[in-house]
Length: 200
Image (cartoon, rainbow, N blue to C red; front, side):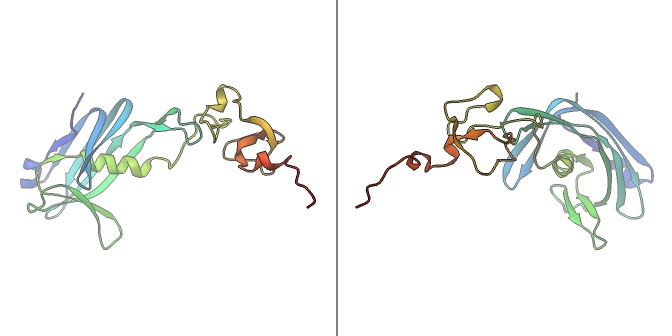
């Protein structure tokens, strides 16, 4: 298993041809601002990359990457495994002045991977591509009931002490609470319901 997805482009930059790299990754390490970030995968993620020379300092990267992301259920925070099948296709440009590879938008609107080291580390490229392909949110089950908004109890495991006390006028679709059920503490003024005031 590869620790870092690298591809060597020295000979490709000197003569026309192609370069190939493949392997498996259990994580990707990349920089976000000045902070090092790690993208963990639930199982080894296979990648296969082919880079072909074009004209001048331009090349073209194509291939596949199949990571299984570890995400949290948007309702109850349980771990969810999200498999992705990513088709790679990116124009590249060699610029020896560049210290770290980065993606920039060309005049055509197409993204270009700019790099300066012929021993190219593809970690940041694969991480950004993966994050762009990932869903914004996931649920572990469409019937997930979420967490109690008061005590944080996982309602999939059964009711908590805050359940079934005060009718909820509007059903919380995001939590998937069936119509006709109640959840007391969603209303902070529930305790005032039976308060009797004098006529004076």
